[in-house]
Length: 153
Image (tube, rainbow, N blue to C red):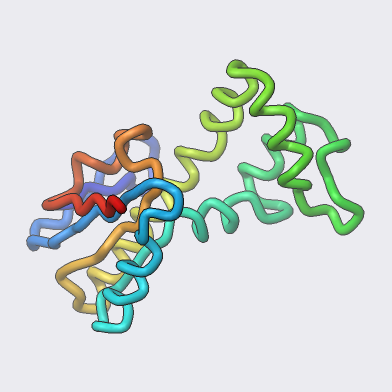
């Protein structure tokens, strides 16, 4: 069973059919991308958290606006996109600022991933692989998973 936020605050939409969700995680250079690629080649739908994380901070998105509001326009490139290197320097030098950034981006990432799961469900898929580097650290998605695959080299 999957539950999604409904159109009004506090409302949950529950999908009763069984969907098989697999979390795929692993450290840097562990081979996770190779495993993800192999599963994609076999026809498995893959939702890549890194790709979603870039999408949710695109200009004009809610997360983008909140990031600029909290960190200032000096974190922007000339084209209006977030300068990831500059923002990274700020948040990796301050645990408080890193928590702030995570509090802005993580809910948006998880919401976008759940929407993609629902999209695959509606298209008839009964399984989806979630490629999430920080799966255990964030812990928000683990409750939805049937299995977790940890790639370790």
